[in-house]
Length: 122
Image (cartoon, rainbow, N blue to C red; front, side, top):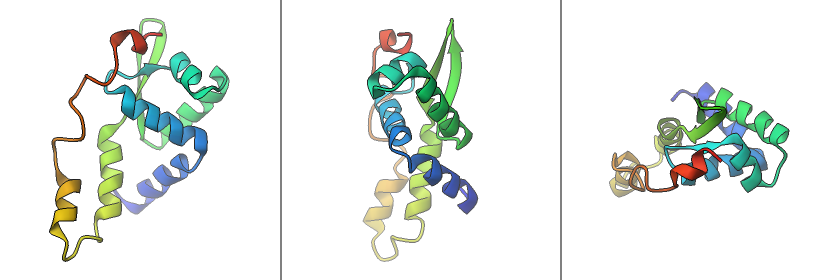
């Protein structure tokens, strides 16, 4: 990740609702969540969440796909991992154990177990 992309990501995450959306999608897992369900969980209107989803997608932090009549959003785990690695790039001199936790490929949780399929289409 280059500095320009990191700045775009941080700008998108610096707003409370957008940060909450990303955290919700991370928990939601790779299957993602429908826009309406995200709005309900965040306690904001669908038009408000739509605005924030667009900003997060523009920053490359989330992905969208169509599923029937719904747009389903999911966290871009690769982009989020790249952002964390960008932050940790220069910090670990003399502390290789810190860097190892960032470089691990197994992630924090098993794929596909974070949410049910019913949540994705709600």
